[in-house]
Amino acid sequence: MKSILEIKNLSVGYNGGLALEDVSFSVAPGERVAIVGPNGAGKSTLFKVLAGLLRPRSGKILHDQVEIGYVTQRSSVDWGFPVTVFDVVLMGRIGKIGWLRWQRSIDREIAHRSLEQVGMAEYADHQIGELSGGQQQRIFIARALAQEAELMLMDEPFSGVDLPSQEAIMGILDRLHESSITVMVSTHDINMAVERFDKIALLNRRLVVFGQPQEVMSSEKLVDAYGGKALLRGEDYAMLLGDIDCCGEREHQHD
Amino acid sequence: MTDILQLITQPLAYPFMLRGLLASLLVGTLCATIGSFVVLRGMAFFGDALAHAILPGIAVAYLLAVNIFWGALVMGLFTAIGIGYLSQRSQIKEDTAIGVIFAASFALGVALLSTVETYSVDLTHILFGDVLSVSTADLWLIAGLGMVVFLVVFFLYKELLVVSFDPVLAATLHLPLNALNYLLLLLIAMTIVVSLQTVGVALLVAMLVTPAATAYLLTQRLWKMMLLGALIGAFSSVTGLYISFYINVPSGAAVVLVSTFLFVLGFLFSPRKGLITTYWRGRRVAKKEAHDRTHPYTA
Image (cartoon, rainbow over all chains, first blue to last red; front, side, top):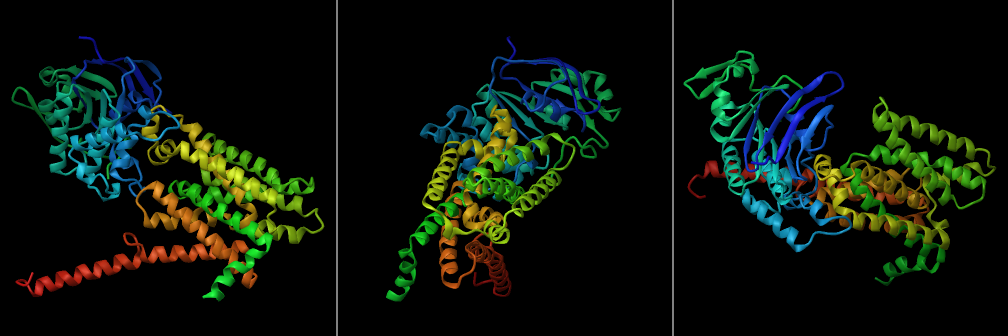
């Protein structure tokens, strides 16, 4: 099958060293890919490059003008800003509306439908600061839906979010899969990645291993990525011990 | 009743007062509209600095005997771009860069103005505004430039909103982030230039920030904040002008004091964010809880 996204020998550096080195893999349309790795492994960096916020130092990212939706970690906006939930979702339509124009009724319809899809329609008129962490995460997913994203990048959607919201986000992921939207999610919870995703990319600055969950779990390289802190349990599952939960490194922040 | 009406209409018999009133209305609405972005993006210091940094432009225009508008406009646009560039490209922090440029520019302006004989009178007018000296030509300039700013905000509302709220989304949508940020700096500069004559350099930042901040306390959407801010700005400007007419204080000072008074009201009594409102709400909830505890079966 033709891939929707192809990453070839991608290297990305900040001022000093490389945050990502020689990463290559490709994603098929409709696939669910989990990017798994410890903190500082370059997960957020990978998404930033894909979303066009960072320039790669070398290598290529190939896709056919795919609309990319990027759901960042929650902390990045001012929650006191005078915008309602609906306003935020409507922002996803800006590219489709075009310059010098105001939103049309179709944009409002699509924004409303997107809110319904993430189960947040009743909150449309709330100011965004009134929402819980998980709800905030969901309206940003709705915004990417309103954008009509074909490839959706979600950076740590499960961290710092209560359990009901985690399940709601899981449900949304399933629905995205049904409507064949390609999804890439970064997480450090490898159990969840194994259970819920089609492919796993194990990242630790370099791509340690990429493949279906079984392949990844049976690979000896899993232990390499986590510095010997992964413990194999049974055939398919791994339980992770030690300090990979959070945080200590400056690559990203939770609140 | 007729007395009050007379108090309001009497000053309007003077053409200079009528012109001042129109100028105040325009400036009040314009400042609050652009001021909404200034408040939300934390650019109050930038606005204050820009107003002061315009002084050399005014001084040169004054010495060359052309309308000070043009001097202020050229200087304002240059300084806005200069500060934007410096804070992006240099190792110095943004507020330090602003501090350096603004003080230097203001000093240069004072030095230039001091060569004029009527120096102290002129400087006072520039610093604190002299709305009653607005000429018909000035009024046209204020209206023209103000209209340009309003139109740009109207047609680029959604883009300006998204670069202010979520630059990351703006970048993923391939919006020209840099260009929009510079555009906003230019809009602020134009607003400042237009407002110079009514409130003056020293108090301009209050017109940008105070009505918009009051509106921020009372609204939950940007366009409502802009509309309400504009209303508050216009009301403060007109009221301030009357106060200045009757008790002979500089118009700029009167306008700023009125808008500050409204801000304090909003700060204390805003339904959602007010200090006293939230305190009373807290008390009522606590009382109700205490009541429910002591009378468990009446609920």
